[in-house]
Image 1 (cartoon, helix red, strand yellow):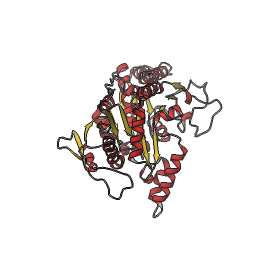
Image 2: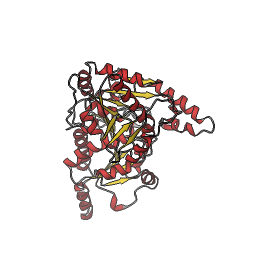
Image 3: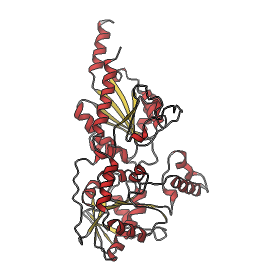
Length: 431
């Protein structure tokens, strides 16, 4: 080996970590990406982090902007740039070498593997459910021990890595969402007879807010008329514009099969006022979690975040218009079929719901009903009954159970340590 080769090798060994993080929807952006990057930067401040967004039917369209505003990533690649990178590859010689890897946090695993291949990176993945093509990642970091590899499972599309002996390809690191809420102190806990503080999480996508906000407002108004004094707090997702909130809040459709009540956004944007005079403060999700005694929510990553924070919830899944819900894979494109598309997608959505026993993350994790889920032709009275039943002395017990199910924190630190260890091992064993 000549002097120049030795010099190049030493430069690669001392190069900072260059990590490309592949992700898709709002849950991965706020719940997984943020705590991981913070933990990584604490250990290696010079690490370069690039966020690469993958195409996803569950995306809101604002992920790139939210990531850029967070300042956590050194560079953010939108979906078009990510796909272009997969197609063209990374041919710049000066960009290659050193410690380069990819971490899959969400989206289509095959696209992440292709992205790693085209950019000449070692591929890792974090998953809370079995993922396709897992055996082709260098290592998969699992949220739960129940996801550990099954011996002898060697299928191409296996959701779990196959050969346990190969470089210990499976690691259990815990729930990243527990780290996303770490450090938040809850001040909830109404005294007997005091107003019940209820948080409203209508979703992080515009279609969800359009369909669920007015319904939740009606639930709150009905609760107040049922002689239960309540304080309402609305969690405005960073993926929903305040202007959008104001527009859909007062636009309940007279022909909508889902009950609803209009409200008006105050000029300062800090609260809504319903037609029946109920004031609803508009806060961030974190602020609502700190103050709410319980929450009304729709399925999604927010239910995992609420569980990690120990916030009891009632999860609502109306199916009046099941065709408006995005579905994974080719199922999501059924609605584009001429004439019959709406009916085909509705049938697929209802079939998908029947396949899953639960939709709330804590219920899925426990395999039983920990928090109430209302699915189907849900009415405001049904939700009100669930709220009053949950309030009847069960809030503290449910909160403790949710925290237990979410597990202890530290997953972000463990993930950062595992990845740095793996990349340092590769660096030490370079030829």
